[in-house]
Image 1 (cartoon, rainbow, N blue to C red):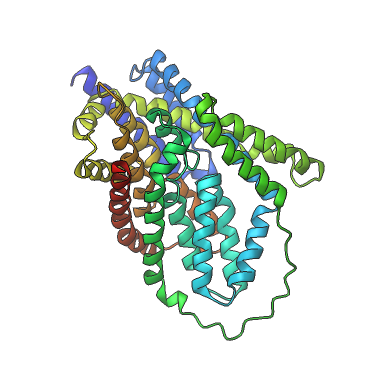
Image 2 (cartoon, one colour):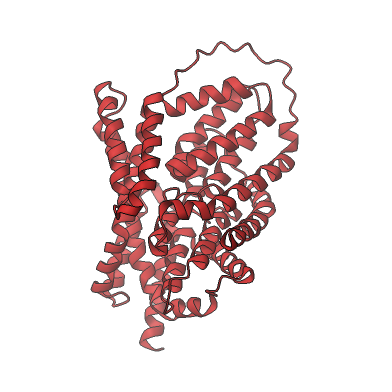
Length: 422
């Protein structure tokens, strides 16, 4: 066995160990508990050089810092009552119609994912939609599974919607607005197809008769105008700073600070809660995972992936990239798959293949809806759903994934190709 092959085998074993631990999380230990030792071991064994490890960490730093800031922003939005207000609106406007509730959940989850990232959708919105359905006497199944799927499907719109987006966005060289314009059609198409599929797959739940609906005595929750205004300003800021060469983390941090001051003064949150919302251990996990995956990307596996991936902008090429990315996300999980595929696509000499990068993003964002292990968001949703006494069914999740994932990946990629022609 050559040294190169040996390093590749070690890298693959380390990646597998990190992912298995992240999925199982024995005793609730953070993902970083194994990822950090694995990264250290990769450096010690020469799988990744110290220079390459430092370079990978530096490359990931702005992205991980933004992730922490957006998590804090989502927590503070919740502290200001944004999600309580959403729960009130859902309950008030849809309690008599399961179909209407599902439509409102699709709109709410899509916008929450796009603006506050998929983690906010999974952690903060799942309990809201489950509670809204139960209070109205409806089955919570359609709404809960919709939140899970849309945490992935609706995360393609903005560079800030998903950690995978941030990684790819920095490599494309596109502006915030250009990126959003190109991904708008795939975003709409994927969500629309998901909605139609859910209407059919959950038709029995949606035909539920509500003969004995109790009178609504809920007090109307005031609209959190200040918090919504700050979030809107943050979105405008994200669009503006791209042309100025400023990292989006500063806008997210400023928005979080603006919300933090009144929230702390009024006792709506605490400094400890804000620090906990940053999810520092997960941020450390991302750094460590980047180092471990770098060992895989720099060996024969990375070379093979680079040889397989087409870089042209033809429809067939984009469909191939999206398909490979979708499969890889269900084998490796979407985050390491993104790191591996991104390294492969950007290693090709010449101009950065922006269309291929965007097609890859569709694959790693929509593809994970196929299996439980496709994305960390789905794994997190499973824990949140269980905590809300709405445990997911593997059979149901698999059926929904098999119906929706292939058609959304293909249709969204076609929509991207059409947008690129325009």
